[in-house]
Length: 348
Image (cartoon, rainbow, N blue to C red; front, side):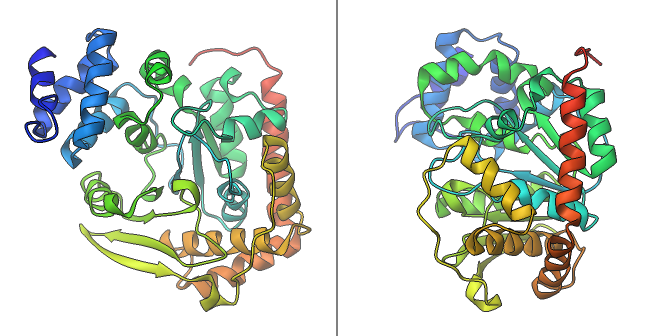
């Protein structure tokens, strides 16, 4: 580990990217806690200064996957948003998941308790507001809930224990690390489709190449709200579409579909995120949030080849929202996850 640190820690001008095999050695040392806490912290900071290469991130993804519980649970879309949560925007991906599942597209969501640098509201927080403590559920129980609804929620640190072991170091550092990207790409269900959120447009090409290297059938890299995978509804969103090793920039403009809407001022809490999500699924939410869910769902249906166009996706999703099918599926999933939470937790 010391020799690897010397390569990445020579300063902004002297540091070099590690090759894939070298990065694998570093990832194994860190995720298996063979490196000391000081070495782990030094590596993370050096990489943050240098900026991680595609090969380095891919190596950390590979080692995270090696230590994670990954099964062919369902063939659908993996929604990879930031684990440091939200502070200023609606968690559209949550209600969108149930609308997509109602349309026949299995969805995988995943997350953990909030992390730096943002320390925002997470999916974990929203589930707890709903009476669901995902960390207490066994793998079998979560998979069974997904089998009945098409929505899989993975508590990442329970299904990939090395990430849980590294939480204290990440908290002490208080900044993003290579793990902030790697943990989003564990792909617990072996999904063929990926939608992935980024904050800066400077990482588009790297993330597009990484998605290609990881052999997703199709992927959409989104510069969304707070670095999430959620498309904006009040303005166009920059995205990168990836297929067959090729990628191109695409602007998704809600005004092109008659959906552009100004957002209301909201003080977001976990309670408010859940309330707004449920109101959208019931068809009684604010128009801006309803439209945001419809747009995100339609684009994801097209990405996963469940609709030939965004317009067709909107037609499908609007009908499912109006009929109450998405709300009924959400209630079924919620009931399954709540009832399972009351059972003794067992390992699998």
